Amino acid sequence: MKLRSTKQIFGTVTKSFHWVMALLVVSVFSIGWYMDLLPLGMEKLEWISRHKSLGVTVLALVTLRVVWRLSEPTPEELGKWRIERLAAKAGHLGLYLLMFAMPLTGWTMSSAANFPVSVFGLFTLPDLVAPSQELFDTLRTVHWLLSWAVAGLVSVHVLAALKHHFWDRDATLRRMLPGKYSGKIKDS
Image 1 (spheres, rainbow, N blue to C red):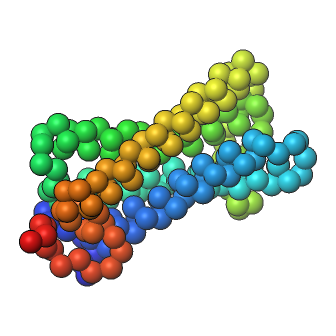
Image 2: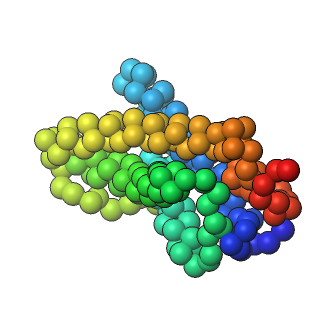
């Protein structure tokens, strides 16, 4: 297996980023929705702390992922139609933007509420803004709306991968799965 991607295959580093980020995004999303259902108390505060720490991890990893992606070739898209390839580019761009926007709005929201963002108890991030109830309320709404955008785009991303695999019968999904990929693009 190659560490770096080529014009035909995704490398091990890119695949690892993809699946680790997928697991983190699903985890942060799930924790966020769960903690909102809890009454105010120690349990809720513990889940909020986990949510923030994982959100900061997403922000750090998406930054590394973008740097990595810009430093290597990207495999050619396998979509049959131009509109499909453009939709894939727009969807990926949207996912990257959301992976930046969600943690940044959460961090800013915590700052506006005058709540620190401790990262796994190891260090605390600086506040991005001065405390402001009005800004907190706005950012809370924005963060919530963005969570729905994440859910929507991730759903479309998964459905598109399944469409490529079962309907188009191309290698789009197989070449992102962990493990060795033969490089075979089209089933016979």
